[in-house]
Length: 322
Image 1 (cartoon, rainbow, N blue to C red):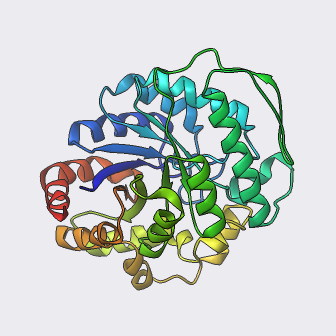
Image 2 (image 1 turned 90 degrees about the vertical axis):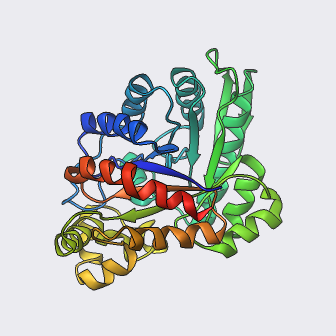
């Protein structure tokens, strides 16, 4: 049975609203939640990019049932993996065991700010494997010393740990990242409803583990307004992940997506009031084998109406997908 979650999108939402949106998501009956972890918004129009870990700590106290998750944190540039382990363990305690650490190889948009350059995808996956190994070792509560190709850890230990180790989910896009996810994670994350990725993950050793995806949608009573909003705020996603991982700032994303049309956006983001359209978009993920699907409502100002619709119409219909 697929579970359906809510995405707290730091890039489009003021930080205090992120917490109140998660409270509303819990009340609306979402099964889980995820939160982006960025330094920049994708494009200027989104207008925000608060520190996800501060918001998560607040959300852990403001909610009581809703699982929380980073979607995703890069533990290899802005953050050292030993610090990520400490943050995640603390969130595990604050949330009462409701936190999952989502990890990925990162995007230049967020990681270039420390001035360390931006290596090839192969190197990024090697760094991710080392980082995930360090984090897993620290979750044991033992002293950790580590000398790798990219990271050093000197006599580190976490003194505050949750009763159960924080689960680790790792973003995958191909064979290299799949191997990292199988070797060092408890679940996979993907950016598209790709059944082949699910199959490769299972064949590599991930069979039976959770599989997370994310679906953007733009609900509202006026389809034309929704289409316009989707193009304004979500056009950055059109070039695809291989481009998105390499661009350095919001101005680059604006230039790369300048020619995207509303019709093209509507192919990627279901728009308008027709619940069936949104359910059919979600069906692709369910049929591809994803066990968890996080929904993104495009536009920070439309979250209240989205929550009411999700509780009364969308979630009941989605759960019929099985």
